[in-house]
Image (cartoon, rainbow, N blue to C red; front, side, top):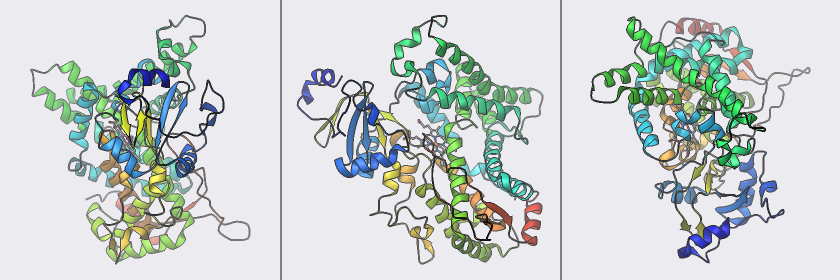
Length: 504
Ligand code: HEM
């Protein structure tokens, strides 16, 4: 395929492709060398040998790994009109119905329209309107932690899901087995399975999608049809709920409602199309969207880091107590006076970043960079993990050190913000980064104000040694670990119980 690319692009003929780890099995090329376990680590070690840009081919597709912030910015940001496409994943998009998410859509008009609408209610200014709900649900989380501290991860998951359903649809979810949440979980399984590039042949050979379902070996089509049903229901249910609530006068203020009101004011637009767009946009950030899982991952990393570092918990308490005096729970307008808490949030996003390879971008046209030929349709990964573990920028990068972001007790603006890579790049950069930043801050501040998070003790009474090992996959989580979540004092318990009703 490389030869074909070169023949088609005479203007670039003769230019080499970016350096490559050597091929072992010619027809599959590098397929057996692509690391499947935490590939960002191997890519980093390859970048140390081959440079900031390296490439390999697997099953006829070319991959490029960008190993530094400079290379990532040069291509995915500065030349973003060429590098903002997504590859085709037929099992996910066409067959299982996940193309409702603009995050997976090809670069084009539909993606642009939906992203623009999403941005209207999730931009840096608009996200402030969700603060009361985020605060309320962070306080509810503290109450759940008081009752069932061992289920902290489940509580965090529920809190995020609940906040999102409330903000978007005005739906009050209270139970972990709520029908929306259950449906979302099944839909996410479908996502996880069908997005695997090599799990289904149709993802490698897209023409297979035209094979009829009754055809021998076309099991994937029947599987996809079953998933599509779940995914469609999952997209439609909450939206129908809002419409019904509007009809019977029980609707609560929410994003879906205000968007619907806007459409109602514009009789000239095609309502059907507009409603589909609204539905898709609201769903994008729902429970099963992969970004929901990234936020859960960040919160899990926070619990892990605290359980590993009692000295950091102590510094955080000192800061929180100096502002709150043990008399109340934190609120958003305390953030300016809580630089250490903000630094913990930044360090969580850097230390074990939830999307170590961000998301794949693909290119629309042939290009040349640093003397290398980059054929169109190449898949690009910016190695966010490598960028966030660059020892020149973050000394001792494997250590969890919030103080790296501080100077003289204040946030140091000269230290590179992990958001340069943690949320992806260019025109595809995560548009939910402000929403999730708020969620992380208020959760970290609330939990630390009233709880201790510590490693469990062994038989001899010593704290067990916890290790930061992360799962592999598109979203990386801390491997399961134990930690004790204990209220700091009797008065902390009282604050938690009162906090549930006091969310001003
Ligand atoms: C810690 C939390 C989160 C992390 C680490 C994260 C990270 C990412 C990354 C790496 C991408 C891919 C960017 C690229 O292609 O270069 C992305 C895309 C996206 N994220 Fe997030 N995200 C988080 C939370 C959220 C939340 C809470 C929302 C919704 C409110 C959200 C909505 C989206 C959407 C809609 C896209 C697709 C953008 C597009 O393709 O145009 N994310 N996110």
